[in-house]
Every structure is written in structure tokens, then in C-alpha cells.
Amino acid sequence: MFQYKCLNPISACGTSLFTEEYKQVEELQEADAVLVRSAAMHDMQDVPNLLAVARAGAGVNNIPIADYSDKGIVVFNTPGANANGVKEMVIAGMLLASRDLIGGNKWVEENKEDPNITKAMEKAKKAFAGREIQNKKIGVIGLGAIGVLVANAAHNLNMEVYGYDPFLSVKSAWNLSRAVHHVSSIDEIFENCDFITIHVPLLDSTKNMISAEGIAKMKKDAVILNFARNGLVDEDALVAALENGKLAHYVTDFPTPKVAGVDGVIAFPHLGASTEESEDNCAEMAVEQLMDYLENGNITNSVNYPNTQLGVCQTQGRISILHRNIPNMLTRFTGAFAKDNINITEMSNKTKGDYAYAIFDVDSQITEGSVQHITDIEGVLKVRVIK
Ligand SMILES: NC(=O)C1=CN([C@@H]2O[C@H](COP(=O)(O)OP(=O)(O)OC[C@H]3O[C@@H](n4cnc5c(N)ncnc54)[C@H](O)[C@@H]3O)[C@@H](O)[C@H]2O)C=CC1
Ligand SMILES: O=C(O)CCC(=O)C(=O)O
Image 1 (cartoon, helix red, strand yellow):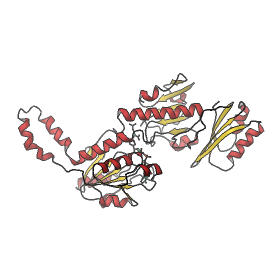
Image 2 (tube, protein in one colour):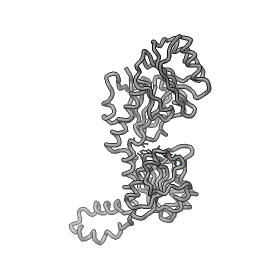
Image 3 (cartoon, protein in one colour):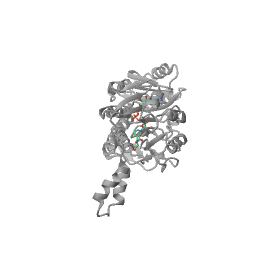
Image 4 (cartoon, protein in one colour):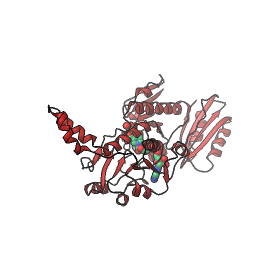
């Protein structure tokens, strides 16, 4: 029996996949697994039983990854599962920054009782005129699951698209329209684009990636779109640029007290992934990955441990070992099995940064003594008998 806790509402498309082997609990301390969306987990250190966290979404800055990695807690996310939801909102954001649909709609609301509204609006509408996005230049910073979709959609809307991502994956490169100009300097985006949209994770290396210096290089009346995270844009510099007329708009899914209500800001309460489809996709993927890890020890789409799959165990026993990526670990594991006269039938050992993961299938039952021998090896973080 596995116990799981949901820290946010998770679509039934995912939770309905749990079998009778799973029980939902209220207390985090009792949970073997956690399902989370945006709930902040940094203060949740008292997690004695926790084996895994599945983030039903992309960004994991709400999870204490370094601490959980050291505790042997595997953190999963669901790459791409909500990308289309965000892409559609970015396109909407760009249109809202180009055409004063918000102002126009507000005018209708304010004048809804006017019996002459049909006539009055023809006079009023000049206040809400705008520009078209066709033939404008858009710069996409970060060409991952969302950035690629935004870049391709903008190309299909006849925009000229510039893309910047020094870590572009092969998958993204395959999916990206050939019409996108792939630039090697972010300044090319700052200097040339009418719309600049950012789709990178919030990391130490990406904090304030749109800085005062970058904003100074932008065209007058440029629009910045941030559907990724606050912290990526220097808000002091941004507010100053909106107030002095350098920038036309800041469209964001991450309002803060500093930017909410500032003239030129169009803000939403983190709605990018709030669609039925994205919520269903994320929940399904998160639960499937969680169940495969808990039941079989397989890892797919973890952000802190390597992808490792050995299918379903067909032998007498399976043991999994989360450990530090340091020399001689495999020799020590196999040595410990040899000492206990355990024959290994299949194994996989993969590494990711400072961490590594090994799964061993063996043709006899794994004893408590063998588990202890493995646990005692320096650098071992968590040992689990799967079967
Ligand atoms: N508004 C919302 O509801 C949502 C927001 N997000 C945010 O969007 C971010 C991106 O999501 P995905 O595209 O799904 O992630 P992803 O992991 O597929 O793509 C991120 C891309 O950023 C690139 N990147 C990393 N550092 C960079 C740098 N210094 N310069 C340029 N590119 C860099 C990576 O190479 C990668 O291609 C997430 O980390 C999350 O913070 C994601 C989903 C929903
Ligand atoms: O679950 C949500 O609504 C947030 C989505 C998000 O920000 C992400 O996936 O990074």
C-alpha cells in the first residue's frame, strides 16, 4: 500500500489512475508520494517517508530540489504537458497588448445602459485603436516545450521570429520551424524585436535575465511578455521603463505588488496552465510517472535523478539504490551482492549531475542483511526493495 498527498487540486484524469494499492492521506509526514502544482514546498522539510514528488507542470522552483536530492527523494515534472495552454495565452497576451480589447470591453460594460450605445460606440472606438501583429518581430527567449510552440505559432501568424536558447535540445531543434532565426546573442532579441517573450526556468543563472541593461537596448514601445516566472525580469527597471514611455506593455502571468496596477501592465493570476486539457495532461503524466517509480522503481522525467527503466521485474527480486555520483559505487554494490551470494540477472546504473541511480534484478529474495550492507556504503542515499 502506498500513501499519497495532493498539495493542490489535481485533475481526476490523473488521480483516478491510482489503484486500490494507493490511499490518499492528509498528513504530509505519512505520505510516500506527493502530487503538487504551485504549492510552495520549501518549508516542508519534515518528510520522513517521502519517496517521490510529482509536479503536475513544468516549473519546479517551488520544490527544495537540492534538499530532496540529498534525502533520496525523486522529483518528477511533466515536460510539455501544459505547453499548449501557455502558448495560447501568450498569443492572447500579444493581441491584448496590440489591440485595446480590454479598454474597449470596459467601455461597453460602462455604457451598457445607454440606449444610444450603438451610435455612441462609433465615436468612442477611436480611443481603443491598435496595431496588428502581422509582420512584427517577436523574440522568444528559451526554446523548450513552450518557446517552440510560441515561435511556430507566431511564424504562422506571419510574424518574423527570433529565437534564443544556448542549450537548445535536439527535440526542440526538430520541432522548431526553419523560418525561426536562431540567434546566439540575447542582445539581438533586445535590439530588434517588437515583442519579447521569455520561456526559461527560474534559476540562479536566469534571475533578472531581462535587466535594466537589456531593457535599455530595446526598441521604443516594445512589449515584454512573461508567462514563465517573476524573478526573470528586473521589476524596478521594468516599472521605470513603463513610466518613462520606453516600453508599451508588460504582459505577465506573475503580478507582484510592484507591477500590479502600473500603467501598461496587463496581468493575470497565473492562468497559463489553467485549462482543462493542460490540467488533465499534467495530472495523468504525473500519476503515471509516480506509479511506475513506486511500483517498479523506474524513473521517467525526473529533474534530480536520471531516467532509468528496467520494465516490470520478472525475477525473484528487485532493489533500487539512489546514490551519489562518485567513483566505485557499482563495484561496491556488486561486491555486497557477491558477499551475500546473490546473483544479479539484470541491472541499470545511470547518472545525472551529482546523483546516480541503480536498479538490480536478482534471482533470489533480497534479505534484510543485504539491504543493510548496501545502505552502509558511503554515498548511498536511499535503498528500496521493490520486490
Ligand atoms: N504560466 C504558467 O502557467 C506556466 C509557466 N511555465 C514556466 O515556463 C518555463 C518554461 O517551460 P517549458 O518550456 O515547459 O520548459 P522547458 O524545460 O521545456 O524549456 C525551457 C527552455 O529554457 C532554456 N533555457 C534555460 N536556460 C536558458 C538561458 N539562460 N537562456 C536561454 N534559454 C535557456 C532551456 O534550454 C529550455 O529549452 C517553466 O520553467 C515554468 O517556469 C511553465 C508552464 C506553465
Ligand atoms: O499548475 C499550474 O497551474 C502552474 C503551471 C506552471 O506554472 C508550470 O507548469 O510551471
